[in-house]
Figure 1 (spheres, rainbow, N blue to C red):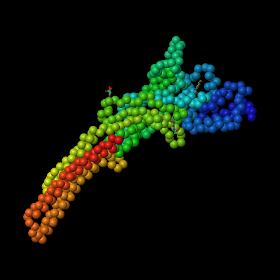
Figure 2: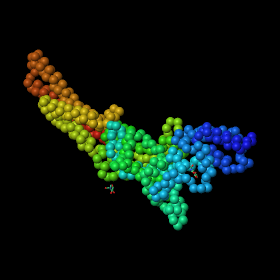
Figure 3: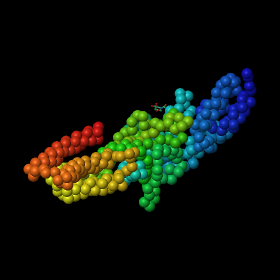
Figure 4: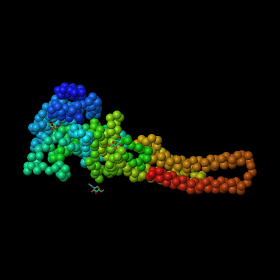
Length: 470
Ligand SMILES: *[C@@H]1O[C@H](CO)[C@@H](O)[C@H](O)[C@H]1NC(C)=O
Ligand SMILES: *[C@@H]1O[C@H](CO)[C@@H](O)[C@H](O)[C@H]1NC(C)=O
Ligand SMILES: *[C@@H]1O[C@H](CO)[C@@H](O)[C@H](O)[C@H]1NC(C)=O
């Protein structure tokens, strides 16, 4: 199949018009075609054409709408003619150090798509500075933080005036330069530059902080690196499980990634993890440790569109237990111990024994109610509620034991009355022996309980501690 070159270009232009995204091979083809003499135009089979079409089509779907602006084939061709002279600059910083060319589009990410050997993904680094945890809300399942969000990436399309930086004309190799020297750039540049389309997973609220002006900054280096810092307040969701409350350890993930570009185009890295100031630790209910994300948490897979790289950190939050020990565990445990004193009170002192047990019972029920209103919701009982319920059952057991004794005494007195009415001539001696035996039996029952209850409570406490610690 032989075509004349002009017809060939026409076909390509037509194709480009139909699929207006000019990236990848297609664009190369247009440019090279124009530079070559007509004789050298390679033949392209129908299959290859189809491949090109489908490729172009796919990249259109993936890249989203934002990539389409200002790249019609015509202005491409126009610029390719003018490669010899300097690019037309549309915006320069005040010191004329960093400039943007007229074909710079802030909607196109600085990914080099023209390389033959596949696309090298753009690396976006995320860091956190001045990190503070404002609130950990265990009813709303949210965490609120203040931080300077630091985003770093490379935009090779920024034109740097090396002559100004190195007047002696010796430009060091990019790889040999040490740590980047960040040169502050005025903020007007922010609106002209491409910024990463970052999203935060499970986001509930994002505010950039401002005092008189929005708190943000932009720096650039001679290695084409861009550093954007913005002071933010971020609220994000964190699923929590309260089955072990208040001996629970919660893990929250803060993940930030690209919204549009999957991991073949953009890769997110954690630049540095947040450092916690010592002061705020004390006001929170939790002791917080910042850990890096696990390998399985460094990507996420939304429905359909691919594998997205994410950066971020994990917050491991350990609840401070001492407050709960002092206000709940210790008093309720002591109440159970006090309830054992009832076994020492003589059985015929009904008021004394009853008053003690019923008071303890009511106090424990009251503590249980307070916990239920104050603790976050768990499926079923949480650990603290389970503890208090068991304490209530221990006091209830002592109450039950005394009821059994009272029942015995009652039955005994009924029998005695019956005997008296029947006029049974039981001698005084046998009667008093019977009463003595009864009292002895009751005292022995109390003594057995006095040993049995503490043993059972000790067993329960050890099992409880064991289950909680594991
Ligand atoms: C912009 O134009 C210059 C030539 O003027 C070219 O080298 C460069 O690749 C173009 N950049 C983009 C993003 O098209
Ligand atoms: C915070 O605590 C660490 C050790 O736990 C200490 O080295 C550091 O100086 C403390 N920072 C402040 C600001 O107190
Ligand atoms: C997503 O990408 C990461 C690395 O970039 C890889 O470890 C992971 O297995 C990928 N997941 C799937 C489901 O392809």
